[in-house]
Amino acid sequence: MTNFKTISHIIEPQLVVEGAGVLLRRSVSPRASNEHDPFLLFDHFAFNNPLEGPLRGFPMHPHRGIETVTYILDGSVNHRDSLGNAGVIGPGDVQWMTSGRGILHEEMPRRGESGNIYGFQLWVNLPAAQKMGQPRYQEVNSSTIPTIEKDGATIRLVAGELDGIRGPVTEIAASPLYLDVKLAPGSKFIYPIPSGYTALAYVFEGAGEFANEVVESVSMVVFNRDGDQLEVKSDSGVRFMLIAGAPFKEPIVPYGPFVMNTAEEIQQTIADLRNGTFIK
Ligand code: FE2
View 1 (cartoon, rainbow, N blue to C red):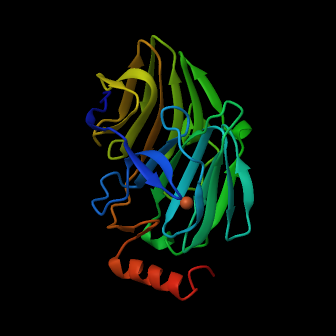
View 2: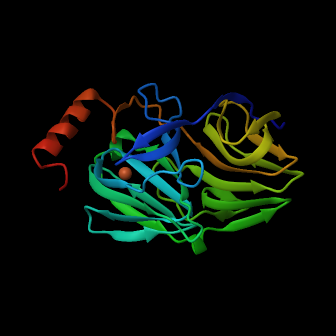
């Protein structure tokens, strides 16, 4: 029997200033309550009107204990890191970074031809056993992300599976589902998400009916964990990022760009940064 998911609550993104003065819409942030386990943070950066801001970006900063997935829709982000990697993430591209025990990186947004910058950064937790693993960095070119057209839905499959097709981001410890879904006016989208998973939908264009409730952009929809099918309909068209994954069910202690399991591990992280043993 089909058991449709229901909405738990809707989060209105808050404007926050991060990095060297970048204005972001933040809907999920790392908290000890870990209610979106295994997801820690979701930021939406948009420098186009009305969020016009100086392009100071995110100068060199450390991370430990997390993975980040950056998805750019317009403009680009120049990056470099302590592993010696450097590159540009352009429109439609994805970059995922596994900080493991420690990485230092710089992320600097640039405007595209339209004059805009638009994208998302998702933080995914690492399980305790992998928090002190090797850092890794990978870029996924837009051309390798499958686009599936189905009954009025255009789905870019960043991570996860649809109709036997797998998205290119496959090595995130939490094995998350991460889809960019655009529904044409008058269309419907049904997607299986196992019961027990955390499921979120970040609605960033238009409006739709999510689990029979009307949701307008820009909003983060948090679904209840029961139910195993997600249903979205739209009369006027809608676009959203669908994010889902199985919780790790481990305690977390977040501290800025670090997310560990205990306060002692955070103290050790700060000590490592102070005495130069953070990057090995
Ligand atoms: Fe970062």
